[in-house]
Amino acid sequence: MRKLLRFLLILFLCLSAAASAQQGYKPSESNLKAREHFKDMKFGMFIHWGIYSTLGDGEWVMDIKKIPYNDYKRLADFFNPQAFNAKEWVDLAKRAGMKYITVTSRHHDGFSMFDTKQSDYNIVKATPYKKDPMKELAEECQKQGIELRFYYSLLDWGRADYAFKSPIVNGAPEKGDWNSYINFMKAQLTELITNYPGVKGIWFDGHWDRKNANWHYDEIYGLIHKLGPDIMIGNNHHLAPIPGEDFQAFEKDLPGNNKTGFSGDAKIGELPLETCETMNGSWGFNINDRNYKSVKELVHYLVNAAGLDANFLLNVGPMPNGKIQPEFVDTLGKIGAWIDKNGETIYGTRGTVVKAQTWGTLTAKAKTVYAHLLNPVKEGNQILIPGFKVKPKSVTAFNGGAKLKYKKDKTGLIVHLDQLPADEIDRIIKITY
Image (tube, rainbow, N blue to C red; front, side, top):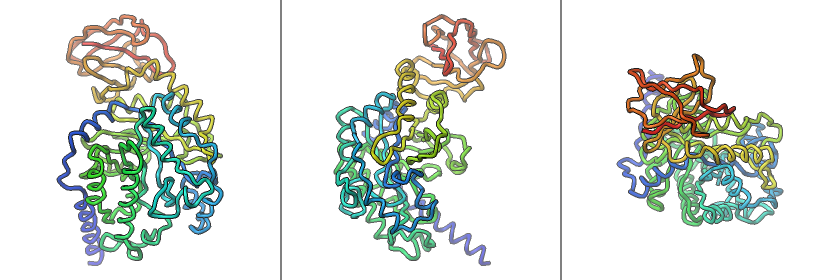
């Protein structure tokens, strides 16, 4: 009987939390336009940066190393990123072919990387730096035509009202002050949207810490959409989208995959999609992490994401001095060089033309389809694009323009690859009709 009652209580709390979403939400016309523009951009820079970077052991160092909160807070005393330069960051994103930046305004350690009146535990009041890098970044993004979005943690390891690890009773922590915490978040989100120019999105994280809590999304999402109807909300909750959200986030997995185990309940909805990944194995700066992904791996991730109609948000974890480490700068420069040549096949395209094939994937826009050959062709020197119903006007190599022989039959479009130039990253076929 106790197990049954416990199950019913958990079910009730889950339903209550879902019911607190922004029910009846109808996106504004400007929001719908923002969604289409978001899908056009395809490639963005994720930035994880905070006082944790001082220890050079990733953004979870306080939790993993079990550092007492009051001891951890002392990191703010010597966080002084004198080498931070917003223009350098935005220049780097642009050279890499990225169209937007999503940056951590506040991570799970509760430290605010912006000038907030809601807590003295922030970069302006608690560090010798005394400046607001988010304001500089927002202004530089606006100047250079790069969209800015803020990551915001729902989870807080230190605040008394959040009461980390306190049991959830009736949708709220037993030992905390849940209404106080919700009001704190709403006040900070209001600051981020009203005090920083051109904010286009809020990227939430940490819901998974309290799956049974009532996060008051009706209030939070409603507030954001009231302050900025075109602002897009996403939530890394590892679930199907809930009412009030404007894009669906996937962590370290392409939509439909679940290699990391994060996406078990994340059924793909009808919203724009975005997947995020690291350049090594860490989000925040980790001085011992040399597990760098190659340019080829990252370009393939971008192309495969586009083939699934998703954006790719690629992360950098700046060093405590505010510089982005040279290994990342080098890789991003090489990705940018690839995009300079091949961006037509990524920007503004839509995916899910056909499902991914063993040889690669497809992207499309208007009356053009791009077949990306990412893997070796197993049988013969030809590929089949299954279910291709229209008669092509031309089938050519994207690079060089050589005409390719093709045949259309009931199985789809068969393209011969004899005249397709070799390329170690991606051989691309351009099909117009």
